[in-house]
Amino acid sequence: MSKESAPPFAKNLASNDKKTRDKAIKSLASFLADDAQEPISKPDMDKLWKGIFYCFWMSDKPLVQQALASELAELLLTMTSMSSSLSFLRGFWEATVREWNGIDRLRLDKYYMLVRRFINATFRLLGRSEWEGSACDTYNDILTREGGPLCPTDMRVPTSLAYHLSDIYVEELDKALASAPEPILPAPLSTLLAPFFLLAARTPTSTTYKRVQSEVFAPLFSALSSPPEDQPPAQKRMRLDPSVQYPTLVTNACFDRPSEGKIEGGILRRKLLRQIFEIASGPNTTDSNRRKMYALFKDSTEDDGSEEEQ
Image 1 (cartoon, rainbow, N blue to C red):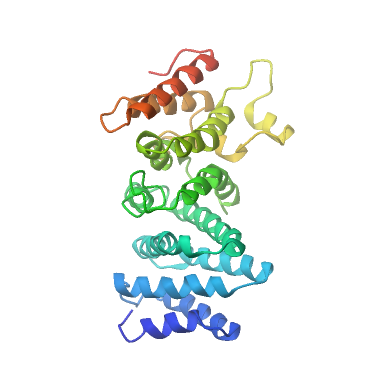
Image 2 (image 1 turned 30 degrees about the vertical axis):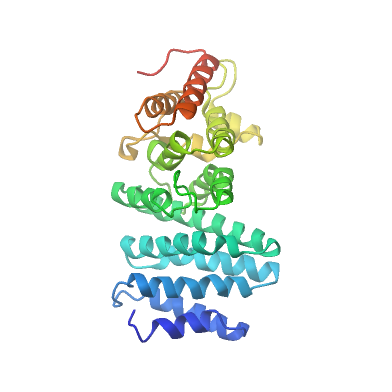
């Protein structure tokens, strides 16, 4: 994006006139999908996302908000390269963290929805790449680096963002897998949950740790628990029981090597618990969080009733 094109884009996106904003969004979509464009510089990306952020701010009616949130998130999947998509995603998260505390109470729910749409679209993007390692690592860095929504040590980052991501992360991963147009490789949970392992280990806030354990770890480990021997196989049981959480994820996940195929839920659960134990043992884990993570490992492996995966 040239220096001349960035300011008009931002100005039109944040216009008070809905028709002008709609036209600007369509122009933006065409611009991002054009593989002849040069990479967007950091200053221009900041200007662009300030305009997009306030374009969404101006959308008032619920159906308009929902449509725009989906349209913005889908831009990740229309760009011509993974690096361009991840650059755009980084701009989204930087703008969201930067502007979050200025969002008034009446608008907060629609921004929660926008975050949910971007989480879902990101998982579909990564799944389409067959969970390519460098792309997943870049995404995790976006989330956990200083200023990222899951950075455990940056006190400037609003805790409500980490809480919201804890609430929706695994759910949206399950939805993204279920909505894939064709079968994709199993989701590597060790990789995709790495930001939450880091947050659990290093957050200085007990309520943040509690949120991660109750909304990420506990329901996932429950879903991965092996069914009793007298129950039907997992997939059949999930079809019969709508209360089973994350049905698609449980039957299409692995530890860290998607190319080797999916892993049975009970085995995967034990591998993830072992990872929690190892992270808890690390030198950068806070003492209070170490105790909690050890307790989670101990309680969960006792509940499992089987030998720990070595």
